[in-house]
Length: 139
Image (cartoon, rainbow, N blue to C red; front, side, top):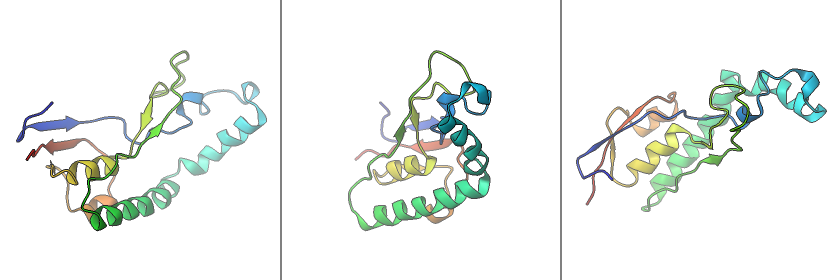
C-alpha cells in the first residue's frame, strides 16, 4: 500500500500476446495442428506495427471517451492468459495477464492519481507503452 503523495514505478510487460504461451513463433509446423498452423502464419499480420495500431488506437479512444463521460473510476480491463509454466517457448510465455498501458493510465487517473511521465490523455492514446511513474493522491 502506498501513502498519499507516494510514488509507484511500474514496468510490466505490457500487451502480452495471447499466443505467447503456445510458442507458435518457435515451434516447427510438424508439431502443430492445422488450426494452430493457420494461427502461426496469421501472426505475420497480427504482429505487424500497422495492425497493432489499427486495433489498439480506436479502442483507446473509446476508453478515453467513456472515462470522460463518467464520473466513476474506470474498470481495469485486462486479458487473462493461459500461462505455460511447463515449457519455456519464448519470453513471457508464462505471463498470466495482458494489459495495455493506456488501461493502467486511465485506471490511475480516474482515481485522482497522477501519471508523472504522461502527457495529455489524447497524446497518450497514440504512444507506445513504457514504464509508468504514478504519484498516488488519496483523499
